[in-house]
Image 1 (tube, rainbow, N blue to C red):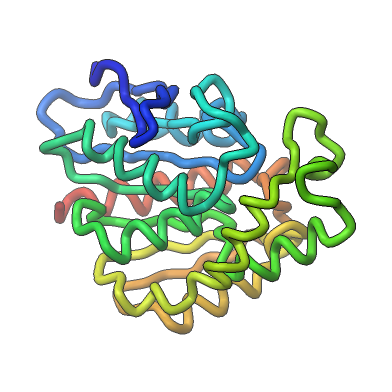
Image 2: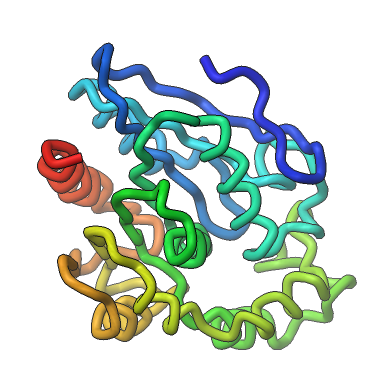
Length: 242
């Protein structure tokens, strides 16, 4: 529908657009986490639920991930913030409701803190303390030699480590976000701890809401329907006032 979308490096961003009701000018853009892509089952489930209810949704793979162009080794939070900006550029005239999972959550906070085209924000198991995440998960991996979680298709780059350290935490960005914000996090998340959401929720401006899903892991393996229901109902209510 929107043709080819490219980032500032000219790399094609792979996306899938789910149609909604004609005339609706709000689109839910869904961004994935580190080592993920737009075809993760819970991402697809969320987009399909929204579309079925008449709410347009676009799920994207950041450059270097999934079927998007670019090298995975070049994937950093900062680059993905630029990728998201290029997707929003392509959605000219639409109001953007962004849902970011994990590292995609950090991307959303950084983008929404400076880009007023994002009119609503959802952080789904959102990464907040980026430096701490990299140290916790990859301190035993040699950058530019080893891989993230022993995934051969996901090499750990020094660029990624440097970017997480430079950002440090997205916590200060919360003060610059002036739009309604929903945070959803599982209590059994062992990749991005619940504390990340608790910390940024405390700093966030109203209106804000934090919902915890008891027993849910980082990708909501056994709790996808509950997660989808929470976001779907919040989005449906929010778009009435956009």
